Length: 445
Image 1: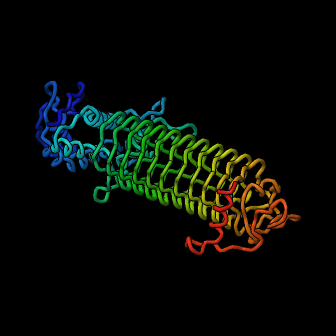
Image 2: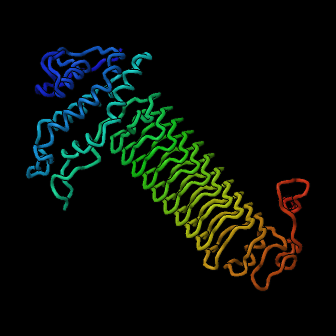
Image 3: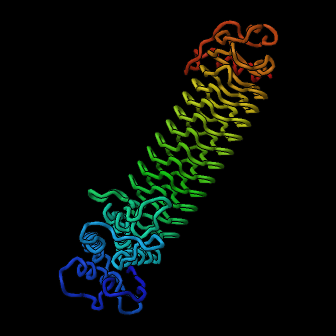
């Protein structure tokens, strides 16, 4: 059974003195439902899960009607702010106190049965499916930003305190016509392992240290959210939006993020090993010292990304775009770079040992100073205007399909181990002459 602690002393509009008051006004209906949830009298109250779920829609509607009718004056405008920029209105404050009590009940609950999960789900739905009108009213409680006119509606609404909340196994999917929205909520340290939050809105939410391992977050919106040191191992994030998100130190190993957006984000030291990152947008993001070993980055957009000292060994970057990217000191050893675009990128000091550069594209401004190509393979490339030294090219293997800088010829010093004729390269071991010659040369070294 789910146990709710008794709330502090509140006024009549918040919690009626009688657990089941009479009357049919929006305020009375709100009071009736809250009386069932919070039991103003007594030290604690045991609430039947089926009762909570049954009155879920009643509470949501009553909260909206009561708040909106009481918060607006006769002219249909929000009350004026006082000298501190805060609207001093009892109905608004009572509504916020109601939200705080529901958050407190959710945080303090320790579900022990399936019925308790039903009750927790009902409370979470009430908090997350508040209408835009409710959130606009709640916004009147926030101080006006500098330079903003007073009385403006703020769509963000109240900031819910759900820190350290245990939401494992709960659902955050769309409820009817309303979106599941916990944007700008405090979810630091929350337990969300295996939660179903498909299409949920968590814009600007603080999920620092939260656990979302194995969670279903497909199409979820984390724009501007803080996920510092969050755990998202094996999470499903297909087409999720994490633009401008703070993912420093986050653990996304083995996660699936095909088509996700992580552009303009801070992903320093984030861990993506063995993750599926095909067609992900990382453009203008910071991935300094990020772990990307053995990831699938085919078709990914890493334009202007900062990958300084990133660990990307054995990564598949087929057809990925890294134009203007900074890969200084990055480890790309044994990676597949076929058709990858490196125009204007900085690969100074990068490790490309054993990498396959097949059809990769460079520009005359691509920087390769001190890049290590030991054991790498060059195929179908135009290096005629690239600032690469003969010594660097001699570290790897190539054939006659490569357009070399002036003065260099495949099969002649210092590229005597290169094959002068173009060799076939495909996925068939029997006909892949290039790979066979490349591997034979590597073994001979």
